[in-house]
Image 1 (cartoon, rainbow, N blue to C red):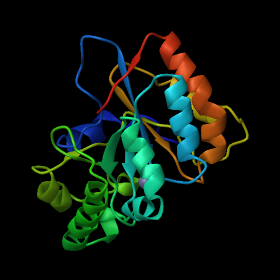
Image 2 (tube, protein in one colour):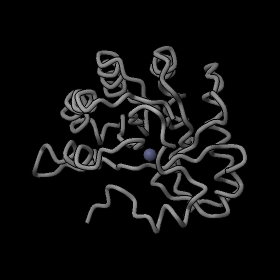
Image 3 (tube, helix red, strand yellow):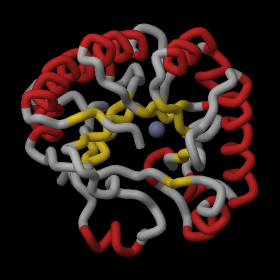
Image 4 (cartoon, rainbow, N blue to C red):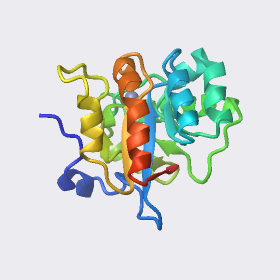
Length: 211
Ligand SMILES: [Zn+2]
């Protein structure tokens, strides 16, 4: 079974992680894209966001920033937000705390090399959502650790070709953080889903907030 919204038992157990944004005076939805920058898909996402006048948060992989510096610069110059997603997309459960922190620092250096300035504490999202208590404790004073309210499963290719859109729209609620991917694996679903999703979110009266 796919778990699109994390159950309260999980969010309660890991309460120092952020699973949604605090309530604001206006209706907000927070879009996030993980695993880029990726040629042909990140530019598609940027273009759609621009058409919809929407801002989003990109949790970038350090090695992809190094490989695609121009595309990373485009994310920054379009005034989107950037977060850290480790240098090599490592699994926290299989990585020592020391190596995990090094992965994050290396990615942070790649982000900083492009002159990106965080507003407040830098953001970090653990790849696969897998992070240990020890890693959380080592990171939480320095970083905001951002999880999600809605997982789109955009990397799955399902029989129902609108499933990804349904996953998101049926769970849409105020202050939700949505996870999508500007990765090759998700490109088919993203190209099919994102334009309609942006329109639906706007039609429902939400603003696109930054985390
Ligand atoms: Zn990822």
